[in-house]
Length: 204
Image (cartoon, rainbow, N blue to C red):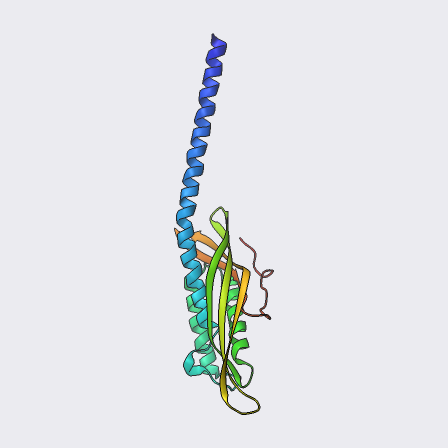
């Protein structure tokens, strides 16, 4: 009889443990589904930021292949402030994204007689959310429209051209800080010659 009581107690405890585990996992799954909406929104906002800063403001666009020191410093200051608002409080993380975006910006205007006028990246699909504690690695499929103005070498006429690039492995890593998702790192394709920064920033 005592033996049966011990079996029943063991069975009851096992059932309770399984039930608590199911409740816990269900709760985690529910929270992550809710977080995915906020994470996607933050990814879209960060992409909008990068689209803005990899192209010169319209009033600064020219075919000179360079910009004034004053305009350069103005852009750098604004970019840093916006990055600090969207990203985790980590100087190295901000520095990597700051340089990443400025390199792409310069690439768009440094060729004489040609200037990038628009960069519009659209998320076509989120391939994966890889959660790890309070961090998540988001893999994106994107399509990016890139517009240029240029001077035709033979005729001297001003013309426009457009290119669309697709990527299946753009990546953004975020961390939840005080209930808000912040950017740690991003690596996105801007063109065939885009620099890959994946080795420069590790999750922390």
